[in-house]
Length: 345
Image (tube, rainbow, N blue to C red; front, top):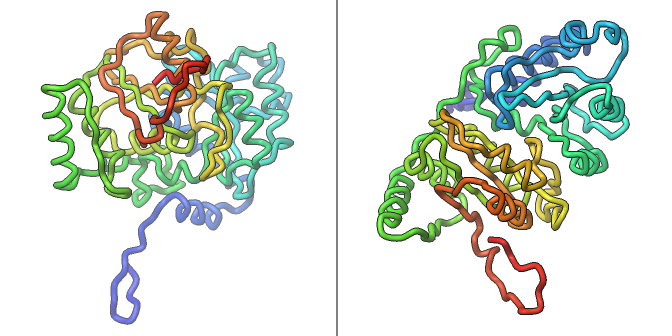
């Protein structure tokens, strides 16, 4: 609490405030890197990253000594290695400095991680300061997810209780409760579904439509169910993944769908890369979205990539319990008979 001319003001701690503490606490860039890597190990291991649930997470040094000790002296640009519950092997690079990372800084990591010497199938770059536009575009082309300081800021961490010296003991953010008008909206949606299989929820900007959608799904769907969430841009897909992960009260597992068709830079934010590795074809989606006993599967997709979902449904993708169309007015328009590629929505 700070007293300013007799007024007390609460200074709320977030990731960026804690990052400044890291800068002050670390005696050198090497010490800063060591503390950040230890934090990242715990962040991934304890389920705070929305892209996967990991069976184990190790430093590259420990992993290579266990698997290929003859390569232990070579710098491959890989910082962490992990295996998820779907048996995918992840290569992870960590950049803890504040400057955007350019493609040259990532080139060794990408060359090593995608080399046939290894069997990595998922790739993640954690860059506190983000990446340059060129690096982002090349990561998107290669299916490499990018997680930044802004993503840590909205992660499901109670940053008020966090310390770098005890980062393994980080606590989870308490999910947000619905306001009365949001409770009313959820109740109205569920009531409407008793007699209808679809409906519209119209709320002004900033009133919590994303949270209303999340709580509706939590009350309507069960573990093993599939939910489809569609949005008009990659930026909104990322925003939804972050918000639902942060405030979920049940276990969710996210599968992000993108494709080469119609995917480009978001007009409003410049985003073209996802925060979790994308699923790009229908065969992969069928495998990735198989029901699990302890979680709701949430398939998030841009409207431009819905043909991948439609193709997967033809190949045995289970039926969706709920489908949500965010900014649904973007789905309207005129279809012409001569169009060879109508919307899959």
